Image (cartoon, rainbow, N blue to C red; front, top):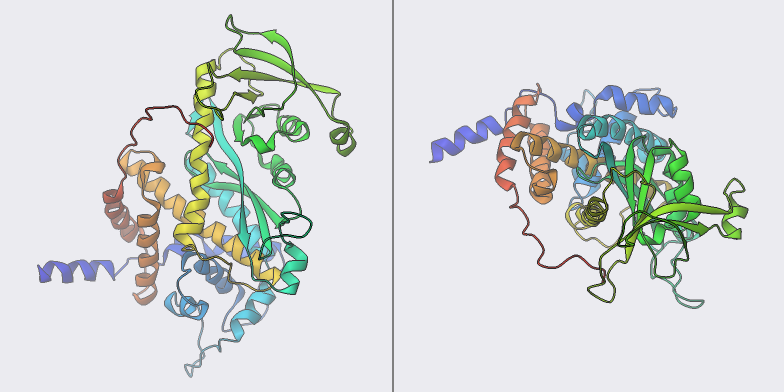
Length: 429
């Protein structure tokens, strides 16, 4: 038994290639992001810009370790010929020189490549499925962070204990890869950040929103992007509409017309006085808070009512993505690490890149195992990737395909069982 373990350790600690960062985040991409934002190192440093980028992504993967430890464990620093290494104080200086712009550019670049590679074949009625949802991150209670990100006010005299960063993401519904995000001060609502994502909505797609996003300006402009970037959202209980056309004999499939508020038209003069959408109602309200129905821009008869009602509930799974980030990656830590506005933005971009990196590996594992990516344990995959990077940092350089294949074989053991069908339909509490 011991001999087998020693052989396994030898295989595990002798990769054929460079680390996962260097495979999935090629140096060319990082240099491109640095060049595009004019942040490339102009002189040789012990902690050059490209290594600082990897460090920030590593911070997103290793929440339980100090930043200096992440730097050491991933072997991301350079030493002089005399073996002199960098001082801990050089790390925040290097991060300040870098700014958050290269991380934002790198996220956009990687998200574009990774989502095209993994999501191109996963469609519903020929449409790519997405979801838009929001979350919040808390920061340290410093004056600079409070002035920039602000508190969430509960009333005129009460607000959250810590400043809050509000984030909204456009996420693939089935692979959970993040396509685009918008975040900033909590004074702006989720709908405001969702509007910034409209330009990222691809053609021939369906994006599913929560009910709080029901806005004429958002929905009309979302469809305007391509004419085929469709949307769906639950109807609010106070939504006022007039029935224009009944598409079925039971009165559950309707074309309705709703007025556009004066406030919305003031914000966007191009909006019409009224707008139309398809309303599909559930057969009956089994519970007091059961969703009444869904509004959608899909008016074609090829989209039957039951399929429309069923696809909406796939959106509920996306809320688990934020749970994976906060619970699994950040280990339920209440606050982000950084204590400056630039540092917070850097940290968030690093966390999002790291999350997509884990989701990318999960998607590839799922393809090899011929199961849905949602049946691969995120925690197990995250731990394997963390261990992989640690071993690669101390092993001899070379190439990693062999190691990644071995890792995927191990992770297949962590395939989750299929979920049992619900005895009752999903409802809102």
